[in-house]
Amino acid sequence: MAKYVSLDKRSKKAKKEYYSSMRMTWGELNPVTRTVPSKKTYNRNKDKQERRRADREFRNGFDIGSFLLGDGGGCAGMRWENIVLCSKGYIIAS
View 1 (cartoon, rainbow, N blue to C red):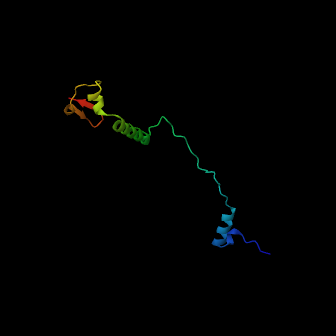
View 2: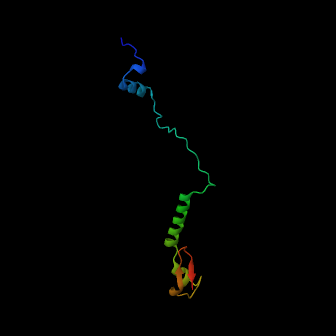
View 3: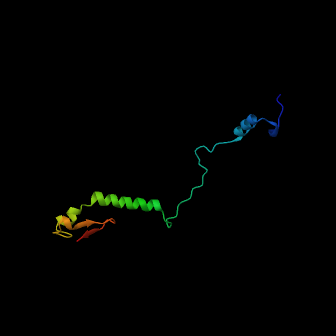
């Protein structure tokens, strides 16, 4: 029959075995509390994504030639020498 030895008198290895046998796992449940971010606060990453998406759509789906020179709409009769794109993406015709 094994005698009971109190925890403070056990070796480090025996304490480790005892405490690890007492622990349980959470399984698939994650105990971390999650909060829903407020939509009113400024989110720099969201702003970056929106600017990148707008820039991609501008480059891929917007043809300057057809807008200014082609369909008769916009500034018909403009020449390519007079068209300048500034850093903000606006079209400046001189």
